[in-house]
Amino acid sequence: MIRRTLSLYKTSFTGLSPQTWLLSLIILINRSGTMVLPFMTLYLTGKEMNRNLSEAGTVMGLWGLGSVIGAFFGGKLSDKIGFQKVQVMTLFLGGVMFIVLGQIHSYGLICLATFILSFVNEAFRPANSSAIAHYSTAENRTRSYSLNRLAVNLGWAVGASLGGFIAARSYELLFWVDGLTNIAAALIMYISFKPALNLKSKPKPEEAEVKRSAYKDRIYMAFIFLLVLFGMCFFQLFTTIPKYWRDNMHLSEQFIGFVMALNGILIVILEMVLIYKLEGKRHNLVFMAIGTAICALSYLSLLSPGDPQMVCILMIILVTFGEITAMPFMSTFMISRTNENNRGQYAALFTMAWGIGQSFGPYLCSLLTEATNFTVMFIVCSCVFLMTTFGFARLNKACANPKNDC
Image (tube, rainbow, N blue to C red; front, top):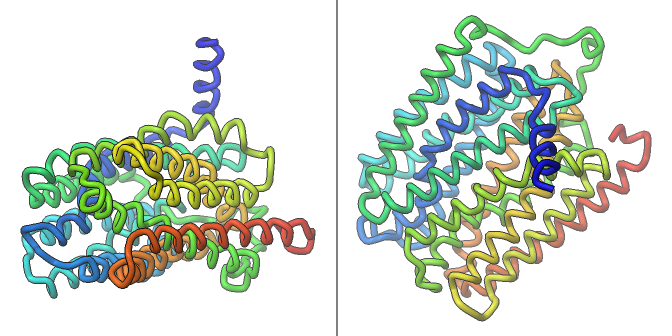
């Protein structure tokens, strides 16, 4: 049994290019310093900054807005000057901006710096998506993206757990660690990929004649709309929900860091193997619908009676399984509709959808929570998740039509 399990793990990781592994290593280093975003709401509403939840929601909304605009320009730049240059520049400048943000105490300047930081930080994502696609093949592309997600979540587990420990002592240090790991990742990428810094996506012979616009792809635009709804609810996990854990469930920052780390650890342990077993068994949209429904259940679980720590852990386990089931197949669905000519545009729109969700979700949910309470907010988010589940199911039916090229 143990030998069979180890063999399954080995098989799920084989066949990926050296560049894919190197990209994931760089992401791991970068994400191991991810400490600011998970604790930003707690930082702003804590004793040091003393801002209310709606003000914190505004800041997180500006982060989302910056990510939308940054993703748009990141996609354009990666097609124009090469995805490697964009990755190096955005990692380095993002690191500098994290350090700068940690030194600012004026609310207005925090809003401005957060927007700029997010713009730079999120411009990295379309370029990174293009790089992964470039260094992978059609046969291993899903696993290449999953390896990248594994690195992100392993780094998240390290960063969130260490971040909870640091936040209990000094929030300012969070910004320094996040910034320095960004800069370190930029330097490693520059050294490792230096000969390919001018590399741009070049169309392969079989793809050269196909240049579909993402904005004219009706199936994809419907998918993007559903992705925005999903993101608006999912990002509460990193914004309003930590405040609920601390203020309503009376959990410590260190325990909050632990449960956030648990999310990443479970993804690292389970995702690659589950994708290896699930991929190709059903259409990507089916897995998205199932995962989104599990996310709805996870938010409702926060209203369960019982020990707060156990309720919190149950919620994290459920939302993690929902994330694992849905998110990898979202990336796969996006990439499956692209080629080397339009990959930057599709990737940019994909990143923008997450940014819109991250922009409007925390802001609207913080207003809803202040006007009502967390119970209402959790119920509303669960209903939106279920609406999104229905949307993915309907989109899957539309994709059954051969004319829709799914």
